[in-house]
Length: 251
Ligand SMILES: [Zn+2]
Image 1 (cartoon, rainbow, N blue to C red):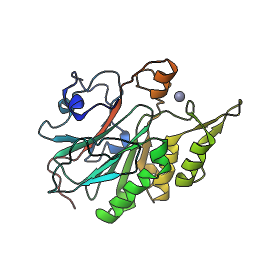
Image 2: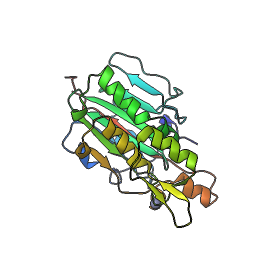
Image 3: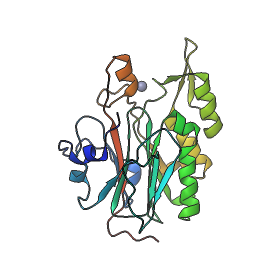
Image 4: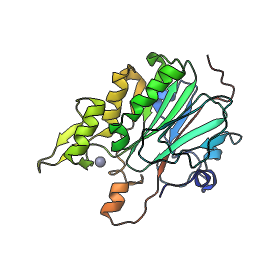
């Protein structure tokens, strides 16, 4: 089950020590971070409590919600797997437990994006769609775009069928992200596939950060596949959140 926005608002307090602040945002104005699943997170303890939190209802789509300045906030039942905003009064977020959480920031135009990309979203090119909207709706220049790709199940652990591999290749292009195992099975690294999508859209490689962690290997993360293997019925979710500084003005 996905967790609701209210759960992220009300969960037990996290002192912030377990949050992952990607290096790529260190000298930018965006406040973007990933949670690691080691304990609950009360989002408003680590972000401005006056801000709204918006997390879409994720359904492995390539639907992108754009929240422009002056627009009203959509309901939490709005189905989408990506959110883009230039509003500084909103924290946007996605949740995942093996799928790839991605945060995007245009440091010039001051626009943020949060993306949930499982294999279906990756195969539908959801990151490419988000970047296209940055370019068309907000006139972003690819050289200003910073991308943080959070913890997900990596090539070490993510065995998939040929249909997944061909679908992801058609969206991301050929690359060094598919590994044939001695048994003949194939593993895929969706983080790298998404990085390739960003590179193809013109984002500079030095502006892309990928978490080294595999959610399946590292026990502090929630992992859907690990839970399945252990016959655990439910698993929690990591969160990925981003917001602009409150004094932000679009360039
Ligand atoms: Zn692994």
